[in-house]
Length: 442
Image 1 (cartoon, rainbow, N blue to C red):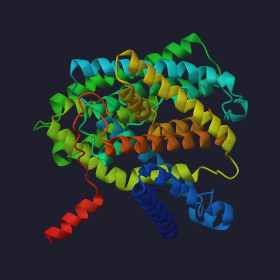
Image 2: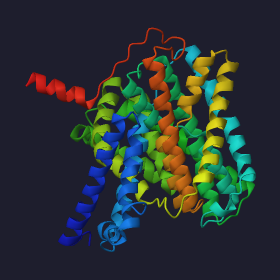
Image 3: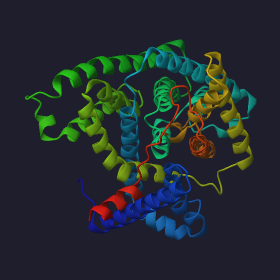
């Protein structure tokens, strides 16, 4: 009970170590050519998975990742932990301080980027012939919702990393984009929760099921904010909180696991609990503690759990057998133009200049981690099949690449990101700088 043989442990550690090393190596290499790290991490799974290793050396792939009966379950467990940690980290990146003008712009962008893109995405299911991409749940309504979400979703972790790499995280532009992405995605996670709920009902859809699912999701959000804010604000830094005193990080991980478990038991996606735990911690805790928490969670998550998560996504893809490049190109153009135009038109409507509007449209059209999470959850729930899973993952990866390239051009040419960011001086810190600093101090 609760044990593996020595040979199984050794085998799993070898496979996990190879996958983790490849994820970090390819992530590092793609960053050298200004590509988001997540693309390299997923590519690690493509290299070691069915797409390359499994295609040319199928016996080696089977031996490495399916070498004993429970190995796939162990990778599945790490995959889920990585997903939870990614969402927790995303919640900790929410912005908490805005002036009235920023609130006005953010609110307009949330509405303008979500509703039109969602509506267009909804009707896209009728434009494209998507019946071949239905999953085992065989639920066209759930598939429609997933398509709409895939058009409108935005990535906090990837766009935040791009801003940090470019040294513009302190700008007004970055604050508005991250806030927009966060609020935006909460609404879309509710929609995804509804999709997985009706998929689990065996295709049965009634108004009662719809109201129940959406009501539970919003009830969970409101309850978590109210109760969680009170608990974090009043009961964290007190003498009687022995768990916090014994381990600050352990305390917050406990809260995150409990909220995720509660979400799962309420038939809300478990990742929603992790996301809300991070958001509430960011809002309720003193700045010094929330920053220390974010640093601690980031160190372990981005060193181990999150790279393994993205690499495992790559392991599940077989781009040789289950990928249609022509369909992907059409879907990519459709999704990108829809989202970018929705944001651009909204920004122009609130009297932002052309360059600012385009910058916002490109930055928000970045699906990254949440796009991959969407595809993972939808695939696991049987809403989509492996072919569409590959399409959505590739859509997330390519749309994560574009904002980094465009914003780098804007910064390097000295163009203004948006009003309020004039005379921008980027503040870049990277690992090479840290190494040089250590060598010089030594």
